[in-house]
Length: 96
Image 1 (cartoon, rainbow, N blue to C red):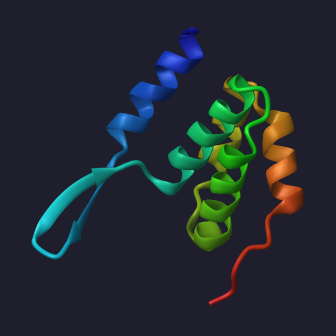
Image 2 (cartoon, helix red, strand yellow):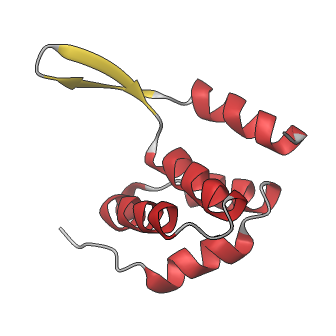
């Protein structure tokens, strides 16, 4: 694991958000961190279509609320520019 991977995981865990479903509370990654993790896994697996599709769907649903500076910073650090560019080309953000 590289320093960037370790730093990303530390950042991602520190940014977790709490959600509630019925009476249960869960901590989950932010949409940005979920996308970054999925793109990283897609790259590490040699191009997993499942990981890319998951990342695209999260992007499409949450597009209007993203911290794009955070995303771009980590895309560079994690060296997943190709995966990010593919996601941006394929995604069709939802308008609601």
